[in-house]
Image (spheres, rainbow, N blue to C red):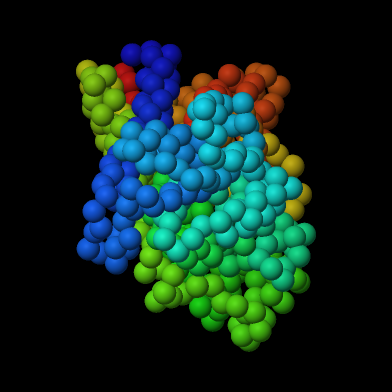
Length: 460
């Protein structure tokens, strides 16, 4: 098996992973199991107001998969004789040229772009629009919330009482801190206008929240900053978390004062477990990273390869994870000898990149992981071993690449192009280095987001 064949197989498996995380298909499957398909009232508290034929249905969709999820919901509900009264769809600005969510002659959903990964003016406008929209919903209505990764930034705006510039400064510092996404969201959602259960608390009706997970553990309180579920973290617990993770120094003065005011009871706490508003909420995860990895594994088996799915989730520093993945592939290659079939090794998860104050590099976590792996493969003189690291959303950092595909020769190809790969890795500047070697993985935005996949192919 040639290196080209290994790279082609790795790319095909990434495509299979993305296809397995199809947001529209997952939404249709989930809605088939909700009360939207039936008129009778259900027995559980959250379903006790299952929509009658005359119940008004509303949709709020936010995240990188907002458009396909909303489109699938409209089609499903129409097929079951349900009319949608209205709604709001907030998606990345780069999705603006996509096929409209609505279809003639009915234009029921207002579509707005948001900014990502750092909230901006469009995010603030979208958050304001949501605040104007929600009062239209009455107690006897039903709200369908379609949530996916990126919603926090796309609806990014501060809670009342916190200045917008302080909020944005906090978000930027957190994104460059290398902190775990769960830790970041524990803080970020407390100062986000619609995070930490505040969306559910703002409406008097039954809420069905269908979420596509982009976080470890598929935690509904973390996905999109948990707009429809309670915030179990108290002010004291948050203070301990900030101290343990050494994040307190990142707090802008205004944010620190706001959190202190909340702790003293001078500003409202986030909605907590047991709050009456959550008795009306039914929230569940409908798609996750496991689905993407399983789809890639199935595709590898169909291609006639042996498959190994690594049980431990990818997490931590991207460069360290890349080196660990490469060493694992080298060990497996040595143990297999001259095996007749290729071996595909699959990881799922999400790593981080901690940017220093002086860092001006360009790239993303998948590109940094791949470049670090390329160094290990080069040092070992590896042949017949290829590694792909790619985001399922098609977007890796502020670049046009989803990730990269590397092998034992990538490091040398970068050097021959006049770029020092070691220096590029050290300054978090993976994009130009990998571009020079022709190693970037470009898929364009995929309309889904279930974190990342890393695919190793060991040939002969």
